[in-house]
Length: 472
Image (cartoon, rainbow, N blue to C red; front, side, top):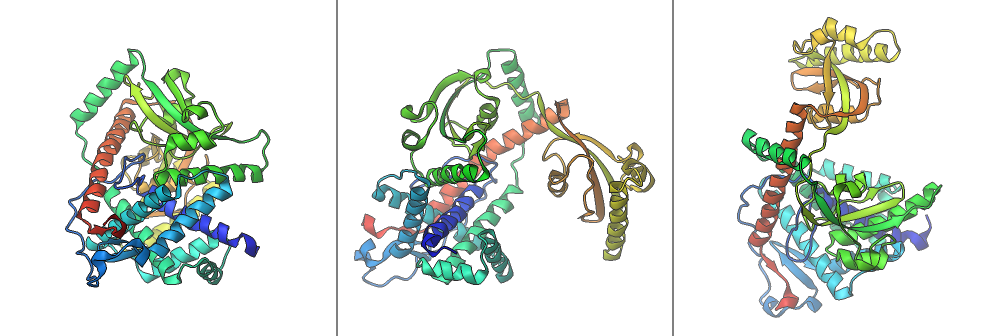
């Protein structure tokens, strides 16, 4: 490994890990609060009282950040040293990518508030009974090392070379896992949406289709990719846009970064591309901002020209509902299996069928009629019809995403049954009435969950004891 490049590479890796953590929560973390969500967010629960402040030395009342304490969060301390490591990681990543950062005092405040929110959310997760086992943590560390082409021992030496203790690094990774699990747990509690709410939503969509369409005001940060670019050139541009994305997640000003770093239209105006009807925007842009609220920022997206980050500034009128979507034609074979022995036999039988189908020796539909124990689909050769992403059980949907047309999945155990899937085809198709209702339900759940999770983030922060000595 080139030792002269190690500090910058490691700091980028550490910051990327934290950015993924924040993004996984659906959070953008400006100073003082969690902001809006741009991804499906979990429903809120009433937060319990947070940890009492730790016992502090009698001299704490006059402490300042120069004494080594940047903040007290619940029963934990953020030291000036830990804060400086994070600030330096952010600074070096921006420098490596050629991006511009805000003044150091503003950057320090943004990073400190992000660290406070991380600690508060992790403490809340622990208080509601969530934890991370030693085995889980070790696997996560091994994965980080593998992703960066290191052994765990090499990762540890690299972390310690940067001045971060190995225990501190492990604690940080454990917090990230806790926060990720908190989101996963609450994501399973999607808000209830009534049929009347769906009816009202679709009625508005139908009215929008019959009237002038929505208009969007969008700002962008754009980095171009040269025509016929090599993989190395694409990777370099992607690194720069990811660095910018990390700054935005830390609360940096979108318009300022657009002026400094965007290479696209509207850069000198903070990236503002103006207000246009939907049909005058690229379809990729409309699809990206359709479910954002004004003020929210999109993830990084890729077009034929390069990489973009979009911000929805405002929207007027109602956007017409999509009439088509990418769908998958799917077949299934289902075998009931109530015991471990039955599950083993079912997996073995379905595995043999999968191999025979892939080898062209049998037809999936014929085996479904012969063997499947799902009465709703067996007589139809296992046909589930055309389904939207997310329409099936999450376990089945995840397996389906890895298949190409004609492929058969591995046997999938789901409770008291074992399932085999075949992806027949994928295509953009008109939406049926039931699919439009399913999409409407998902949009409404996302909107409602975003509001509720934002409330949860604020509630957790407010209930957490936070003391910043430099504010005394």
